[in-house]
Amino acid sequence: MKLPDRLVVGITGASGAILGVRLLEVLAQQGGVETHLIISKAAQLTIRSETKYTVPEIEGLADVVYAPNDIGASIASGSFHTRGMVIIPCSIKTLSAVAHSYADNLVSRAADVTLKEKRPLVLVVRESPLHLGHLRLMVQAAKLGATIYPPVPAFYTCPRSIEDIVDNIVGRVLAHLGFPNELYTPWKGITGGDSQPSA
Image (cartoon, rainbow, N blue to C red; front, side):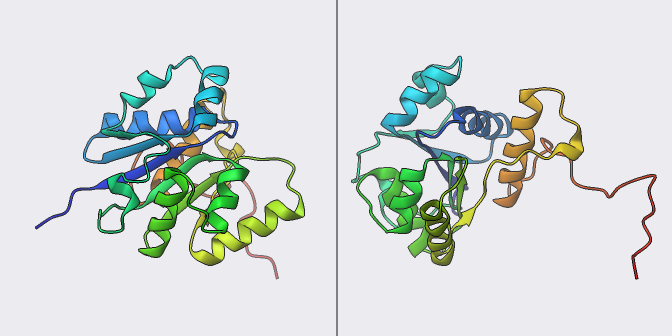
């Protein structure tokens, strides 16, 4: 029996809510992936502050939506099979919860389940500058099996708009999770220069 293609998506209160929105838009357009969405309470505030979307509009892009404190949800159990989870953007508070296995809400519980089941967990951590505590949390989460994926723009694509930057980041995150897309431009090397290896 073929299991459905499911991806858990968490949107938390860091700046950059549009990254999570765009990821959901792309997956909804492409089809074939069942998205399970949690929007934290802090993210609901950020969404209203940073984007033109309403929370119900974003929830409408997902196949299944959960309340942030619904610890009894299906995605809180490892027996519910998924392809993995992405938290985009991921706040430092959420990073800390993941790093310490502190499952006090559904986002951190679903992330902990993803790690214990050895499934991909991508944390799109959005913060700058980073102090030593932040860096240690990233190392700790990485040791548990998470991928730390800061939303760093790729300027070799010569982006002309915020939308270009968002698409590039989201496309690369989706590709990392194994979902093919055409949102980003793969690096093809520098053309017109000396490509000979140095001695």
